[in-house]
Amino acid sequence: MKIGMGPIFNESRGVMRHILGIKKYSSHDIIEIPPKYVRRVLTLDKTGAGIVMYEKLINPIKSKRYDIVHSHVDPWFTKLCLSSRKNFKWVHTYHMFYFAEDWLNSLDKYQQATNQALIEVASKADVRISVSKWLHDYLLSNYAIETEVIYNGFDSEACDKANRDRFENKYAWGDFILFVGTIEALKNPRLFVQLSARMPDMRFVMIGQGLNAAHLGKIYGVSIPPNLTVMNEVKHEMVLDAMSACKVFVMTAKREGIPTTLLESMYLGKPVVVPAHSGCKEVVASDEYGFLYEPDSLDDLVKQTQQALVSTNIGQKARERVSKLYDWKILAKSIDAMYERTVNH
Image (tube, rainbow, N blue to C red; front, side, top):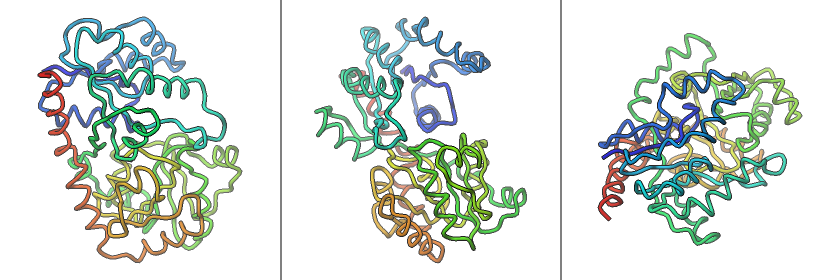
């Protein structure tokens, strides 16, 4: 069975890693849209004009080469699936919505267009998937959109290659508390900076796209304390090395689907501290598997982080939980079964 999957442009983002996880472990022929060689050509143009031209002028699914086309997020591709659906069965995965309260200003035009397409266009797919139970419930209660829950996953084989010694030998930081995210307000990096200031005796590290001291200061009005090191985006292999080396992994996001970085850090046996909402709460579930803090409460975040630092066997329980529920080796079987039902329906 041939499955067209896309669109893929930035392979470091969570949705793209979701797509590539399906490709790696599915038993079917997953065809990337656009293919890797096209992505390389398009991304050479730093203005983004090539990608825009590709979106507007090329219909990569017009032919009947696919049994199924599986769309994710991007409104132009979702609309393309609707207009071309006579050639194939159409599957759409809902990963997340854009909520205005999670951002510094009102939603931009792209975010508004994405939300509109998710509600008005993706809802017409032959099969609709949510990556989390909370998103399933949100779609059903707010828009009467019915979805099947198949979780977002993580690649345990990639995690098994993580090497804490490689990271420690390069940076020699010893025990540290780790944040992996972006400069975006959705990821709430400001709260992590505030956490580091409240715990001056611990080393803190931030890794992610757009992160640097100047940007954090300009956007969020925070000063970087001396115990916090801020790194920009690095290769995924180094992120996994950092997770393997850290003492505690902390998430401060305002909302998440099922966050891949959380799954990875739990699989690597790390105590995790996450806000008690959305996909973070769904993954951690209880204090048996991690530490949940009251969203936006710095005091509770400090308290839970301090408890995580002295925890003992919670990391092993966390690893066992995500191994059973979120490993792509397991989830890909559910995806494949869904593809087969869809084609044979």
